[in-house]
Image 1 (cartoon, one colour):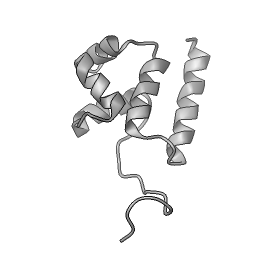
Image 2 (cartoon, helix red, strand yellow):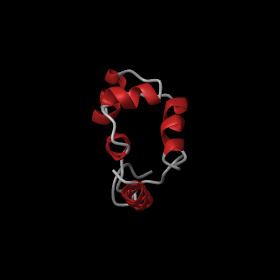
Image 3 (cartoon, rainbow, N blue to C red):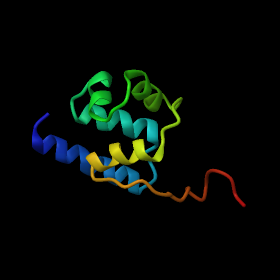
Length: 92
């Protein structure tokens, strides 16, 4: 992927995240693919096993905040609370 394509992919991810359309498993997989890495390569970059990457991408993982921050920083994101869409989730 060219630098321009990677920047465009980052922009699109940021847009989807700001609209609440991007969930963690999908975000991790898209970040990894945008970087052009296999799960094993991605894991090596972020000090994770291939299995941990796979679990993150399927939603089976329970990453630490430290892990999330390492991945987020690489793509210019920050980890924080994101409000749920008022039409979904629990209402209290």
